Amino acid sequence: MSDSDFAVLCCGGGNAAQVATGLFAVRYNTIAVSFFADEAAKWKAALGEDEFELTLPGGGVMKSKPKDITNDPSVAKDADVILLVVPSFAHGEYFEKFAPHMKPGTIVATMPARSGGDILFASKLGDKAKDMIFCGFETLPWACRFTEWGKKATVLGTKNNILAAVSPVSATKKALSKLQGLLGVNPFVEESPNNLGISLRNPGMCIHPGVMYGRWGPESWDGQAKDEAPLFYQGVDDFTEKVLTSMTDEVQSICRKMEEVAPGLNMKDACTLKQWYLDCYDGQMKDTSSLKACMNTNAAYDGLKHPCKEVEGKFMPDLKYRYLSEDIPTGLCFAKGLAEILELSTPQIDKANSSGIKTWQDMSVCLSEECRTLSTIFSRKSGNMCTVVLQGCETARACNNAKTDKNRCKNPHLVHCVELFCCCLSNLINRQVNKPCDLVKTQKRDRCKSELCQVFEVFLFLYLSNFQQYMIAFKMFWEQRQKHPLYQVTFAAPTFHPR
Image (cartoon, rainbow, N blue to C red; front, side, top):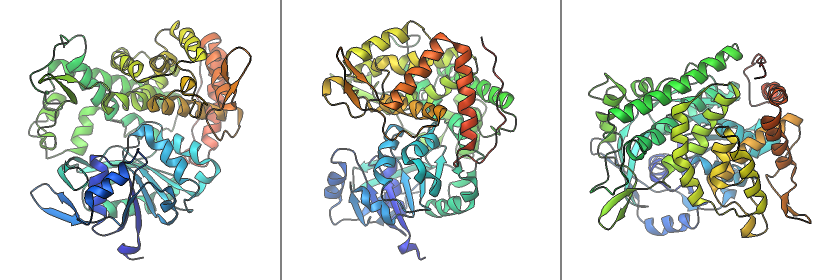
C-alpha cells in the first residue's frame, strides 16, 4: 500500500487535532472529522481552497490539504487508522458513531488516552471490539497552538519519547509501526505493557488540576483578578511544586499497592511526574534538579499561560477549562476510585478534586427529583468516590437520552465518567448493556429503569451498606476482566479484607 492509499481520520478541531491533520496530510490520505456542533463546516469554510500551513520548531513550514473536513461518521469505513485528538469526555461519542462503519483491523488510537480509555472503547464497541486494535497514548506528542484557526498552526515543541499501550498485545508491533510512521522520527513511540499503567501514568491528571490548585486554590489566591494571565508551567512556584509532588506520590502508592494485590502486574511506566519530564523532554530543559525546575525551564512551554477570562481589563481563572473539566473526571477520579478500593488515603488528590466540584455544579442542569435525592444520600458518606464523581452534577445516573431537558444531565464530563463506571460494573453480572440509560416514567417520579443503572445502584448500595459484599463483587469483576478479549495479561485474583 502506498502512502497516498493509507487512510487516516484525525478527529477533533483543537490545537493538536489541527496540527495532526496538517502533518499527516503531507503524505497520507487524511480526513479531518469533528462531531462538535458545526465545527467541521466552519473549519472547511475557513480553509477554503487554501492549504493548511504548519510552522515547525526552527522555523520550517509545511503545507498540506486534508482530503475532506466532515462530521460524517461513515468515512470510518475506509480508515486504516482513526486518531482521536479530542477531550477524553468526547471519546465515547466518537467510538459509538464510528462503530457501525469500522472495518476489522482498524487501529483506533486516543491521544491522549487518559484514564480507563481502553475500558470505554470495549464497552462502546461490544463484540466488535475484539476485531479492532486499540492504542492508548500517554500524552500528546507536541506542545502546539493554532495561529489562525483552521488555517495555520505552530508546533512549539516535540517530545522525544511517548509511551503507548496496545490491546490486544498481539497487535502491538503492527499498531506501533503504523503510528510511528504517521508521527515521523520524533517522538519515538515506546511500547508500554498495559493500559492500566498508561491510565495511572496520565500526567494531565496531576499536572493540570495540581497547577490550577497551586495558583488558584484557597491557600494561595485571594480571589482578586490578576493584571495579566500568569504563566502556567513556567510560573510553577514552591507551593505548587509541593502540591504536584504530593499528588504524584499518592499515585505511586496506588501503583505499589496494585502490584502487591495483583502479582505479575507490570506498572513500571506509571512513574513520578519528574521522571515523566525526564523521559519526555530530555534535552529541552535547562535545569532538571527538581520538578519545579523541569517545568520552569522547559523550552516547549515557553509563554504558555493559565486559562483565564478577561473581566474589565483584568484576568480571572477559567475554571471550566479542560484542565479541570476533563482531567478531574477522566483522570483524578479514576486514581481516587482505585485508592478507595485499595483503602489508601489521598489527601492532596482530594483537595485538587474538590476544586472541581464547584465547576461541575456550575455546569450541571440536572434537576430531576431522583438525582437530587441520590446526591443527598451519597453526600452523607463524605470522601468516597461517589461524592467526588457525582456530587458536582447532583446525579447518580448515566442518563444520555432522557426524554425531557428537565430530567437530563447535560454535563458531558459527568455523563462520561459515570457511564464508564457503570459499563465496568455491568460485567459483574455478565450482561451486555447496549445503551447507558432509558428514562421510564413511574407513578411517583422519573426513575431510570435501564439494566445499566440498576447495576450501578446495586453496586453503590453494596459500597455504602455492606463493604464485605462490595469487595466480593469487585473480585468478581476482576476475574471477569482478565477473561476479556481485549486484556491479554493474566492477573492473579487479589485478596481483599473487609474493613
